[in-house]
Image 1 (cartoon, helix red, strand yellow):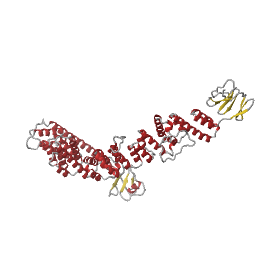
Image 2 (cartoon, helix red, strand yellow):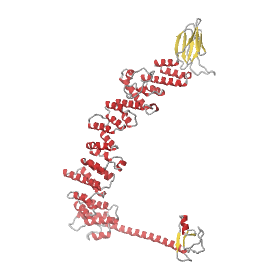
Image 3 (cartoon, helix red, strand yellow):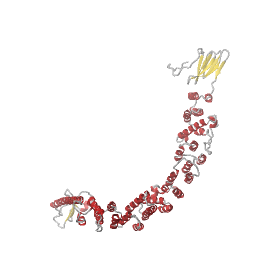
Image 4 (spheres, one colour):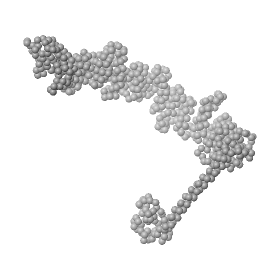
Length: 635
């Protein structure tokens, strides 16, 4: 049987009839044919044979006004098709999904649009559940999407996933024949796991789409339960991003599956930070077991650092400091900058709290002094005293140099050198009687007692390099004269008449030769012993002569430039005096056209003459030359 248009074009595949066809008729979407023994029914949509009815001795089969009539010699019969919906449901019941969908699409033109849309969506949903039951998840997902399935229909198959507060009731008549997932999978754990994995994927996809509108709480709560049960890594991602998980149901489920860290995140998301911290602290203390994060202590410290609830910060400050002073102090030192600037937590209160934790106290004072650069004497002095006490304690315990003591010494020296805020005499009193000679020298330098400082460096420490460095850093941001004064002091210390010391002589020579520019050569030549040879000081003398010549030449250049500039100004002055300006009572102002009443005027570069008040009123920005004189005939 061939299908053809009125133009004689065949656009469908033919249907296969027996050789003895007596008649045929169209009953959309079927073609009905009669032969000697049977009535056959083929689908126009897929050209497949759908039904065969035994019918002997028939000789007429025709379509009369939409009704298919078949007749024998003895009777006339009407072939009445089942309603399309019944046919589709029968196909679905026998799991012939593709045929049902093809038939439903083909029936579109015979059913009103709105009714068809409702019917077709339901068919798609039913088809989706059939594919789902056969574990054809990709096909099921596409059918669920196309049919705009209320996702709770799917969730309700999984026991305990819907929140207890959910008001969802399954569709009636039902979209499928299954009570729950256990019945669908017949208890097969592998199938059940696959179904749960599919639901995770599907819910994750639809939770941010329009499909979720109106019941986001049900979707997110179900997703959380699935993640927790499967120990899925996305559980934490769900809880730290925007979500609508219901607190009561989710909390009970997470606790049941011992997901205490995740439960803390849930509490935090719902504004219950105290409950979250209480849980996490129990995990770190070993009261409850949860291995989700091995660095949970550091996480708690970070959480408290950015926590705006000061009561919580104070409540757990002791706990974090007892665990680890150097890490725990970050809850105070790494707080948001804007919060620190407002001093929401008083630094003095923090320091008092840290009295039991010496390492943390030092870290916090370093934060105030070195990082925030707070200029308060008490913080700078306190930090210096703590450095000093710790160093002395370490030195009393061990005779060998330890790394910690060395590091603290460097920190103390840096603080003493760079800060001008600590109480110098107070620190100096504490250092007296110790072997901290370098630190004593720095303090004497702060008191401008440079000779004492240099004496310590040269005679007690015998550290000539340190003495030179002392002169350099003490003269930073000071004039050249001050620097020369310090270097001359050092030279005097080296050359101090007393017991001859070859090392000091060598140091003095090296100082002069390496820092020639820092000395006044004339004064140096008066200081050095007559016994020193020119060869010994040749680098210094060469540098001094070179510097002297350079200075002389630069001075000559500057003088020449100044003389040239002066000559230019003299020339300009002569030019200005060369042309007199005549002013009489007949000359009028170029602006107001009134005569001049007094010998005061403004002259423009173009030679125009105006009253001073007229010039001021015009606010001209051009260059002007002012002249005034007591003479009435010439100005």
